[in-house]
Amino acid sequence: MDIKNLEPKDVFQNFYELTQIPRESGNEKEVSDFLVNFAKERGLEVVQDEALNVIIRKEASKGYEDRPIVALQGHMDMVCVKEDDSDHDFEKDPIKLLVEDGWLTADGTTLGADDGIGVAFIMGILDDDSLEHGPIEAVITTAEETSMVGANALDLSQLKADYLINIDSEEEGVLTIGCAGGLDLEVEFDKEYEKSEGDFVEISLQGFEGGHSGMEIDKFRCNAIKSLARMLHNIEGVQIAEITGGVKRNAIPTTASATVSVANKEEAIKTLEERKAEILNEYKDSDPKGTITIKEASFDKDVVSKKVSKDVIDALFALPDGLYKKYKDNIVTSSNLGLLENKEDTIKFNTMIRSEVDSAKLNRAEIAIEIVKRFGGKYEVVSQYSGWQREETPLIDLANETWKDINGNDLIVATTHGGLECGLFKKEIPHVEMISFGPEIEGAHSPMERVNLESVANNYKFLVELLKKIK
Image 1: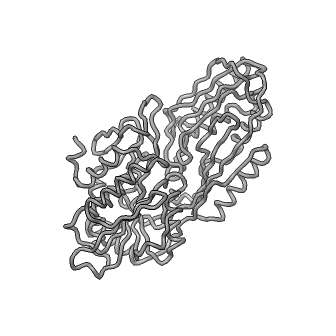
Image 2: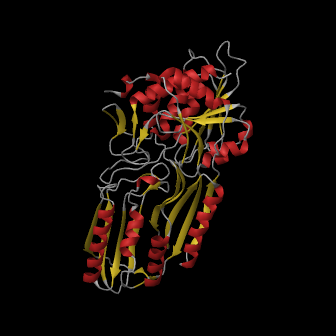
Image 3: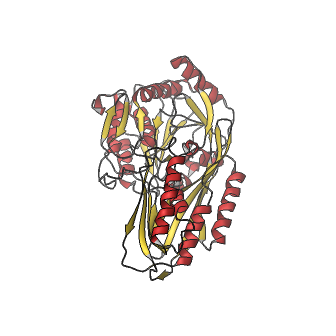
């Protein structure tokens, strides 16, 4: 089935156009300009700031002029992750879309439904003059996936809205009214080079499922970077030649690899094979598709010194990772070691800490920092943002009433462990009532990302009806 034949047509056409434009976090100029032109072509007021955030204003429908202003909010960037054998270039190639069994997905890459579908919803509302609603402020931000850079830069004093509807949640029938805050800790170890004193071995972890480091951190999937550190921990005479892992700071890493010199090749391979068997056995139920290969290798340059190599591996091995605290069905606190990079002069890695409770987030960061310091690493908190604490508001009741009128059942009202820009907005404009919703999206931040077609139609209808009712 062609995406252009899917319903609602406007929404899917908008989403299709977004998928044709590169929009990885940090590379949003083209898609930001596209949204500006979209507004200008329809005679709508539009503002584009230095961070490339876009605000579009649409007047109320006839008879709705006295209604309160509603902000519709989403982010234009996407997480760009591809399968190991994909040759997709996210800087220039359009996303290849597939329709399979009632779902829209991509061919070997992330789909970008997070949050392209939300933006497509907003564009649909802006483009349809037959709809009934009060004044609209569309707020579409940049670099949400890299610590909410756009929202942090946005001048919120220019927003006049009384209500804000964020369209960046991923569960059908769930109304989100709170989210986790986040903190990014960046760690570096300066390299010291020396001659290799042993033989080389290559370890490669591939094909693990990964996923969103907030929404899926409780699924007990293998973190490839942590498992690589586990395999290398206390191997005699390790000297790092090359080491890398992960793709994005906020995605559970699906791959990691290292080429290392070892003092006793036969003994090292034996230990590595034993640890490989342990890891694959531990994840055979929750993450069964991953593979680990161990083989002899060669390397013709100087390697990282034994001391620095051990410090790096020990720090990676000791750093907290994964689910830390869960209360009932809500994930409260977690951390994700998401990215490991081999630079010319440093080895660099990133851990992202999330919690609904800011003090718990900061405490978890202090633990990580103490570990890094003990192994001689340098660290920097490169960004952090507050959580959005749950509160009961009339907008929640109205949303539930609207959903029930359409579907015959109540919404599930919940908080999320994912980061939403509502936390930043709520801190600066606390009087604004906020909710978040969205269609069913599975596998966000991974090549298995897909969005349910029926859910898109249902949630768009919900948005249209809710805007009609807000008074």
